[in-house]
Image (tube, rainbow, N blue to C red; front, side):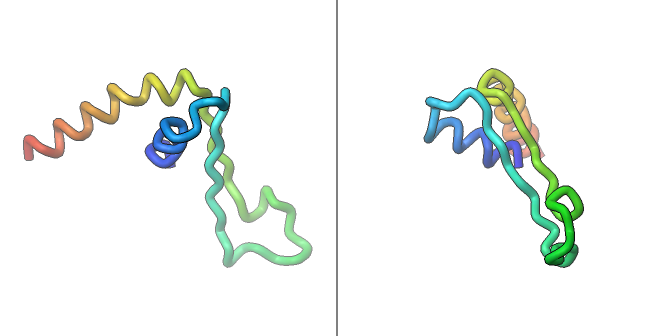
Length: 65
């Protein structure tokens, strides 16, 4: 989810926060609250910018295997 949010941040840099929502559709019911079947991830632009080096490290680890 964080990788997707990072890519969206690159495409839409004008925002200060970025959200990704995980939907558990089997739990969705007309009477269910959103919190019962969704999970929201939220990152600031700074957090995602800092994630770049972490992501690069992961890529280097994968290449070394």
